[in-house]
Amino acid sequence: MKKRVVVGLSGGVDSSVAAYLLQQEGYEVIGLFMKNWHDDSVTISNECPWLEDSNDALLVAEKLGIPFQTVDLSEQYQEKIVDYMFSEYEKGRTPNPDVLCNREIKFAVFLEIALSLGADYVATGHYCQKRTTEIEGKPLYHLIAGADNNKDQSYFLCQLSQEQLAKSLFPIGALTKPQVREIAAEMELVTAEKKDSQGLCFIGKVRLPEFLQQKLQPKDGLIFQIDKNHPVYSLEKPANLSVEEALAFDAKKIDYTPEMGKVVGKHQGAHYFTIGQRKGLNVGGTTDPLFIIATNVETNTIYTGLTSQHPGLFRKALFIEKSEVHWIRTDLSLANGETMEVMARIRYRQPLQKATLHQFGNGMYVAFEEPQSAITEGQFVAWYLEDELVGSGVIA
Image 1 (tube, rainbow, N blue to C red):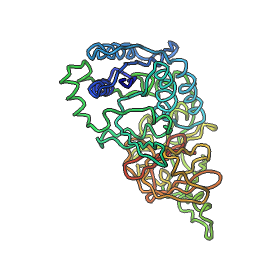
Image 2: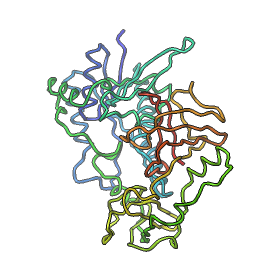
Image 3: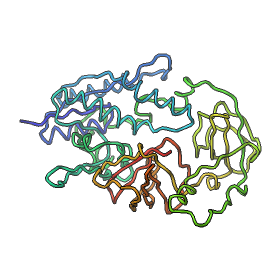
Image 4: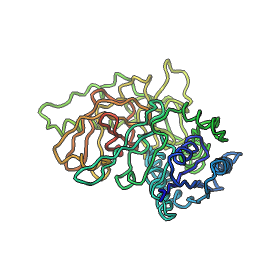
């Protein structure tokens, strides 16, 4: 009996080649296109990208001679991704839609649909790899970085579980992007030359701020600039702190107030902005570019500092609430008081950073060897042992 795989055909080159490779390996392949969005109250753009993408996916399926169907997951998207993101933005946090989309949709709702079609696995066009080993006779699944350093997408899968990995295949993980395009061209797939989509997991070609601005109400507020020599940046760490207290000191965010700086401009709503952002402030007359170092959605205030080296951008540690600590490798999870040396990143494509995990009763601290710029609430920190992603958590 051939094993059956359902491939999430997105209309892009990566998933097209994933489907072809699985077919070559002897799997029975079914192509499924996920329709994730239709809310006419939000104008997406003049074109309708999902229609174009689903047509491309259909053409690829026809070329490969595999069954194809479209599934409408709009409702689940609305509930699990879109609504959640809006509430996070309103709280002044910055969620990562791609990570959520993989955890909640592609490897959850979509996986359930695939299993209901009698599939043994789902496959996607992600640049990452899976290894399987055994512990005491039970399989253990490892999420490994993609072979193409420029394209490694393991970070986006940092919230997957052993159960989800058990049913997942990543056929292009050992290839580079140019190799994938080459295969697509040889096979004369319609997607061979298609540009990579820059958009979010669910809104086609729309830029996130524009998308949000149509939903969140604008309200005027002030932009303050904080001097890099402000005394708040030279506070000494108190002596005789416990390890946990010292970590809490390093992870603490500064509570800025208007008196600490000077007004340099106005904005349309603090919830449109994120820490580390430079574009979109529209403040002129400064010697160097201004970067956002903090936002306060309650007072609708934005705090900024000059240059990307402003001390307000950097912190040495971050905290993850206990309920938000997630281990892909559950066998490695830490008990209270335990530590682990890892390599970690706080955003996609960031080079891996040396860090130590410290588990306590109420959660986990991630302490970095070098101070990190723009640690952002609501984003995910992922940690690796060599090229294996072993766990992640939501930054508090």
